[in-house]
Length: 602
Image (cartoon, rainbow, N blue to C red):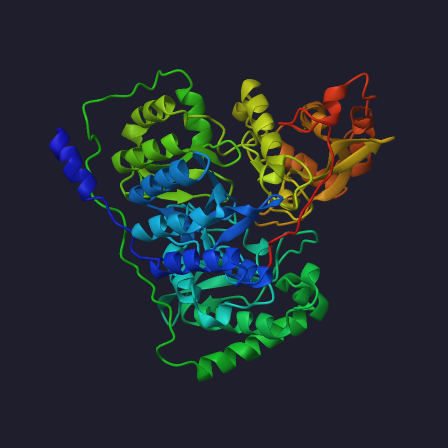
């Protein structure tokens, strides 16, 4: 293919179906910042306004913000990635951060520059509106929706339609607290029981024809206190999707606890009221919504396929399957789609971080290799390229290798989740972000990503109890805190075991407090114990699952047994013997706990 043909191919690449932006919001934000600086806008009002527009407070300062960019259903297009690369270089720290909720975050942005970022995002149809604050947050959708062999139909169009309906909608501007929707493809690839509204596509036969609908779960969520959601009914027809969503939102709006911020998520309302009562309330409210909503109130579901016909080979370059690391990468970073011979390729990031240069290169790679012409953000701080022809996989790997995006282990335990922690968050007590990177580097060095026994397990780390790192649903989860020896403090983590978010969703069981500098040795010790006690066909995930449920018959029969074995690794040395023990990862000074005001709610 010639350069001219290549440029033509780029120009033919699909554009975003939905423009999420409103350019006037950038100018309004700039004017509001001026009024705030002049003392004409009080701090609490400005904080609510700032959060409504997706600008989150940065650790211990009022002069900087984190801008959270929403990617509804996780979709992001090459021109949008290029714009974010430019904005990161101009106004942020030269890198971006992919979160666990399909957002992209730009950190340490000067407050006066936020409006410039909003303006740039609007040019490519992106917004940060309602990415923070007491509103319907980014509507998520599994990156495998549409390509998963086990799904009944693609839920992506419904996720996009839901996002479009609630964005800037008056009914979702002043909720008691944030509210989250999560669509997925199947039981295996989602976390639908851990959000306010989780949806799995389902079909049933009705009068000789196939009817689409959803299995809907309500009242789940992760936080300082986490709950697993409840299934509303056996089957919810697609025409009832919007009515159900509005009904749930209206009940939460009316009955949610607006006085006690620590208990004003919907999961507390469901728990306090009791599921049976809440379920009946939703079904009654839905009947009212169905009877009273205007006929113009509907979900605009666009079923137009996004996959475009594109030549398999777009240049004369070739990639070799004999490249160093290719087989390892192929095993741990790719999945076969139901659309043979295409694959979905997951790009591993270190705790969600990617440089502006890598973003720019990624945009080119998406255009060259993805037949649908865009990427999908994942649930675990990674990026999915879909519709990659299997013949192009070696060449894709070669391209990723040249820009530092070819790390293996994306779909394994070797890719831990780590929230931003003390690098930017007001509530963080530890540098969970850096710890996740240290674990990933160690696991890849030991080639643990290639161990099939560990493949389906997970490590997830939060810098505080609030679960932004999803530690409650990890095979091995951690949340940060502080420990003390005399007058000296050290970073510490509470470790839980056995969490999972597949079809058998359950929260992890508390096991032990682990000093930050002992987390990696403790994980390796757990793996060692597993290898010594496993059954022939065991995985670490299933072995730990039996332990936390009291069904294991080996040397480690219970969480208490695990705790006893790990005890020696948790004993703090004196500061004289090991001064580094008392520093957090990424810091050369003594650890201390310092937090500011949280901004998870407006």
